[in-house]
Amino acid sequence: MINILLIEDDKSFGYVLSEYMKLKNYNVVWKETASEAISAIQSASKFDLAILDVNLKQSTGYNVAKLIKEDNIALPFIFLTARDLKIDQLKGYQLGAEEYITKPIDEEILLAKIESILARNNNKSIHESELVWKDVTLNTNKRELKVKNTITQLTERESLLIKMLLSNPEILVERNNILKELWENQDEFSRNSMDVYISRLRKYLSESDINIRNIHGKGFVLE
Image (cartoon, rainbow, N blue to C red; front, side):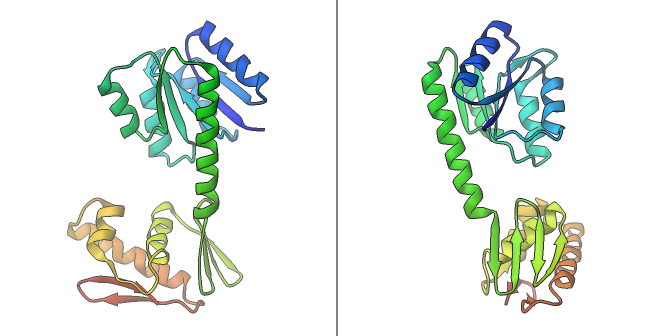
């Protein structure tokens, strides 16, 4: 069953919408405040989609969205709100929303959009969850690197770095591009930090048929 987290402080609308979705065989957890929503997201519960109102008690749906993105929680979300100004919509999409939907809305249209988002993210997960080259497999969802029969749990940045290399085998991945994508800075501290991460990856790959070759002053090639 699909699990939906609904964050809506309008009791009447929240009740009607949650009951309607339940009739359509969705499992809905309805929270009225940002703090309740954050607790639900950080709990052991697994949600397939979050529906966020913007105006919430003591906070905003934007803050909930920021937490989802900053904590790298794999939870797609949409905004469903009465705030229809262009600046609000742009902010919603900049925070990573799949959709920004303004009230009032036809419930059938809303469910059609939800089904489209879930299908799109499911296909994305299937195609992007694993990267395989030679005797190495990276599970990007679990951040696990498998070398032959040995599995190493990676940090987020380690996973993103090896993903960049595995996505471009035998192709130069420029140092500046790595720094821009993963460190957002090209100062000496960031460069030294990147070299440390490369050393770690080389250690993880030491028993594999893969090598990370340094191209002096340019970048790295996975070969």
